[in-house]
Image (cartoon, rainbow, N blue to C red):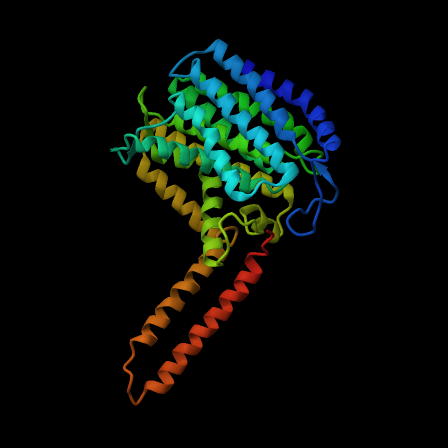
Length: 396
């Protein structure tokens, strides 16, 4: 069962130096800018190419050794094709910077092989109740895969981070798949983990090569697909929604916070900023190694929550644990506190303006009340602007 992982590790170890040479040759290099790119020296990209080829070898091993639960032969080939399209897109983007709209368009196109191969869900289970999607299941699956692609891409902003998170989630998927008696999913997850372990040797801080967009998107689409497959109930196309969310909770949380933050700041959703989970932890004084350890541990912990759902069906307890974990992190000002403060300020500002608007036009106490409310509203607006300045630090 571990042969797929072993082959992937060996292939990644051997191919990553070659990817490094190609990146230097074609000038696919990330240069430090002192803002978002905080590394100390120019670092080659395209490490995702070696991860893709190593994963491809692992997928082939999984296909030849285990053909089960719809994984052979269409779905492994579809995953390889989708990941290959993303690899090409990412390598091109690393060189020429594709616009956000075109990038999203090609991400959607890249998921079509998986959907056409039957890798979509048509029903979700939520607290034991089925939610039938029908043909909307195709749209849901495409949206889920694109969300996974971008969630990992957003987190790929620090040496080793995307690799560590990918390994942790893959390990959780492999354990659950083994518990469920699903060797196909288990071997695919081990193949991804192996490819990332081999690459991590070169990607640990200080990184000698980066994944680039090609690598982060490949990790994202593979994890998103495996999460859906391991969440299936029986042999149907019905996925347990709670289990799927728990497995990829940390990337989903970071993406949700990014959407909230950029919306409240009035920025484009696709605009890059300096407010992701790893940025917050670094700003709080955590070392790079501490951030890697903390976020990797969080992914393993949420994986354990997913296993609890798979093994015992404790969905309510799972949501309580995930919610409590989020509240504790926000309360300790490790993540999410800036977004929470922004939302609170915006809510109070709206309430004050509505209250001021509905005060009687003529009243003995009109002038001081209105002036007080308007001044409070203006202060909140100014405070929000300060929070934007502190929070966003947007780099287009």
